Amino acid sequence: MSGGGESRGATGSPGRPERGGGWGAMSGPPILEIDRVGKDFGALAALTDVTIGVASGEIFSVIGPNGAGKSTLFNVIAGLHVPTRGRVVFHGTDITGLAPERINRRGLAKTFQITNIFPEISVWENVAVAVQSRQPESGRLASLWRRSPVDAKVHDLLEPFGLLGRREELAENLSHGEQRYLEICLALATEPRLLMLDEPTAGMTPGETKEATTLIRQIVKARGLTLLLIEHDMSVVMGISDRVAVLHFGEKIAEGPPDVVRADPNVIEAYLGGAED
Image 1: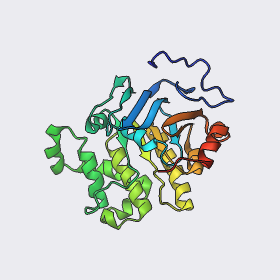
Image 2: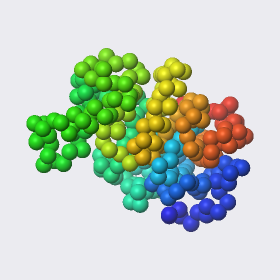
Image 3: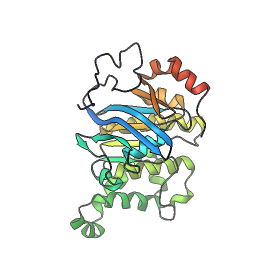
């Protein structure tokens, strides 16, 4: 694993969260390496020397106060922003600066903080369009006439989220929680190896949040996916994550298991006096 000469020897120890640069202790080889990434917007340093490694099959959360740089980091990984410094390596390939659609085709899918669906077509058609996008170009026209493979995939995506009964409903008529589930279905339809969710429980009630957290973890584990999550809700992070990294003013201030990170004084201080947008 490349890391610009960073040593992993003392980082990520069980009793103390890892700080600053370097990868924390991982359960296996990395599927995603964020190597000393910085992102400037004019004179504003939105990210500074952020280094994170995410193991294959891991559920990894990025947390921090508003304005900490979480969404900027996600956008750099997904190709929506080109980093000013550093690089992003996915599955052993440097993807820094690639267009979002090329990154997506390599197996990385992202949902957004604001729901991103096709509101004026049905729930079924939303997911079918996403499934079709993964058909080989030579087979897309044929698949319009031979729908059974597409239909089977759409059915399998909608069923665990409880959306089969709403399949003929226009997406805009779904509840907020259902729309968030539909967006995750669209991301899963692209057959990712790594799924990135940006605040998937935003706007949900506490009951909906608990249900969504359990469901997301079950689906990710059942499909053998790696999950990278942005979340403000600490109860979500504690309930779903294998490891957590904390950003504050664009810098990584801690990384480690959720219970250890939660008790870290620097993390407590960041949240009590957290950055403002």
